Image (cartoon, rainbow, N blue to C red; front, top):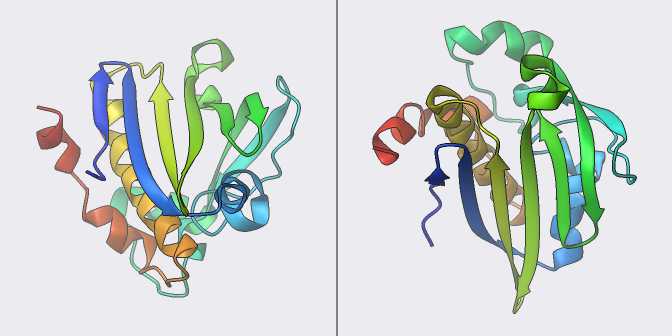
Length: 181
């Protein structure tokens, strides 16, 4: 399975990963803050669609291994970055959907992130769909970010200690411009 995202259309990027199960454990890494903060964001997530919630990124906390943030990301890495989001679907352990980027685009134009989980033997197929993407530059940015975050998630689920997040991210910096050409 190719770990790279696929640009399905100009507004939609899809990633697929086959992760160590069981499905309930993988869902906990998506929804439960104590697990999610190991690879993505902090912030308690609600269970009722329509509720708003905060997510905060602090990339330096995903691993005891440290890496230097790129110059453009240094301030965000030091202070963290928060966003308000809206839960759109909560269907454990199979589906989780929320808005993404309300502060940047406005609640009515926010992008959407959907996680679908399906058991496959002792593994779980995770399909992440990021939709309503406004333009190519944003698609390129979120694709590299999702790729790195999903790499860290996979390492965490395997019980491996990931390298510093920015070392993972650098592997995909600029790669999606060529990949989506």
